[in-house]
Amino acid sequence: MARTAIASRLDGWFHIRERGSTIPQEVRGGLVTFFAMAYIIVLNPLIIGGFSPDQAATDVEGGWLQNGQVAAVTALVGGLMTIAMGVVANVPFGLAAGLGINSFLAFSLVGELTWPEAMGLVVVNGVLIVLLSVTGLRRRIFEAIPGELKSAIAVGVGLFIAFIGFVDSGFVRATGSASPPLQLGEGGSIVSLPTGVFLLGVVLMGILVARRVRGALLIGIVATTVVAIVLESILQVGPSLGQDPNAWNLNAPALPGSLVALPDLSLVGRVDPFGAFARIGPVAASMLVFTLFFLNFFDAMGSMTGLAKQAGLAAKDGTFPGLKRALIVEGVGAVAGGGASASSNTVFIDSAAGIGEGARTGLASVVTGVLFLAAMFLTPLTQVVPLEVAAATLVIVGALMMSQIREIDFTEFRVALPAFLTIVVMPLTYNIANGIGIGFIAWVLVHAVSGRARTISPLLWIVAGLFVVFFVRGPIEALLGL
Image 1 (cartoon, rainbow, N blue to C red):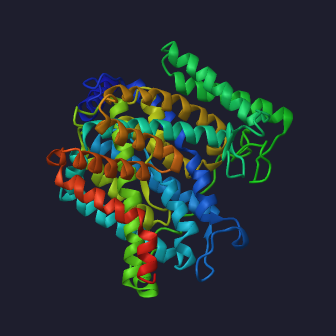
Image 2 (image 1 turned 60 degrees about the vertical axis):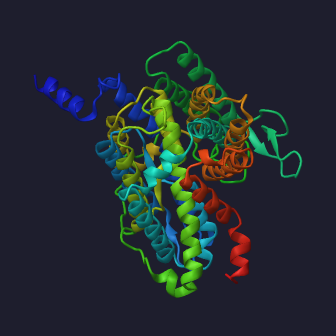
Image 3 (image 1 turned 90 degrees about the horizontal axis):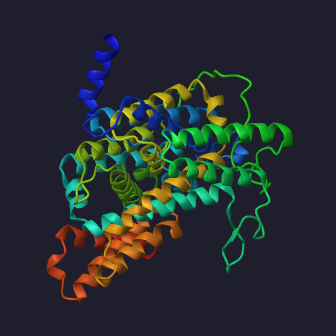
């Protein structure tokens, strides 16, 4: 009876049956989302942190972030914000340190700021996003996007995460030359064991999904990881460490020697929200906040659009239940991520893996968040699943998200061109916000010059104009002497 009462309460809070799901289905979805996102606990410290000053991203005063500390706060903030997204907004969206923003911090901001000052700008950016979300302006911008563009965003996100999977697995590699810039495998051939494991994962998960097997993605992740561990124990390929293209991209799959590691949370609160304005001046600091804001604001909006459509939660206009609350939580994620020196936390498109497994409610997010919090103490376990296995999941989910393309009328060129540009620019520039921006600008221009200016929302005009400024911010900064 106690178990029935708990199930009833969970259903009452998360509306599990109403959304056509079950508790086991939500748990499986939460597990798959965690496995698809867990790489961030390993990758984020490698981007913004390091094991020693000589191989870390050092700031303008020589300061650096220790790898283990970054891993701990990455798991902490990701766990808390994902749980908040589930409980407050009741959507199956996982949050973690955004890869675009953490790279921007490590390779751009800390060249002229200290790490606390850079994280302070992330906090300022998050506060602005929260204010726009609370006042409802962010939702109004969301609603101003035409339905065809929202579908194009979902398709573009699908192609983008599939492309991420192909690149992370080594299936697609850079040639190092201008033309062609990319190639299949190494020299046009699949020669590495990790890439072979990736292909095994794609085939296995694809068969299971096609046969509508319950838990298809979770089964595929576990089975492929077991195969990877066995093969690694025999062949001893090892991690690439950025040098060997035939080795495992991030972590070599192996059973951990220990399970428990106490987290070091000393980075929490090490932030200076106003130091950047004093160090480089208010105009230069404001331009950096503007860049952070656009990266954060529209990347998250694109991810939410695609995920809500894939989960079947979106209405015809693209909105979904709990939209305003989800926007607020995502903004708070930026504040929390900056305040803990984990970088801005945003909605992860990798959540599509859990949705593909059947996640439809915030209960899946709670499961994912709890696993992130556990990962603070079980860091060795997060390194068992290799990045190549997670990459296979992304390719399968990308294929599933392509179904949204049927909602775009490509026979109407006013729609076809902006939609096409939105879809292709995301993967080709490795950035969701770029695809959204180009799509907005193209939609406004094509409709305005073809006699449909009155159909364009005033907010869409404003946002398209801001995107123009965003895309030419380099010359603007040069003109201002920044």
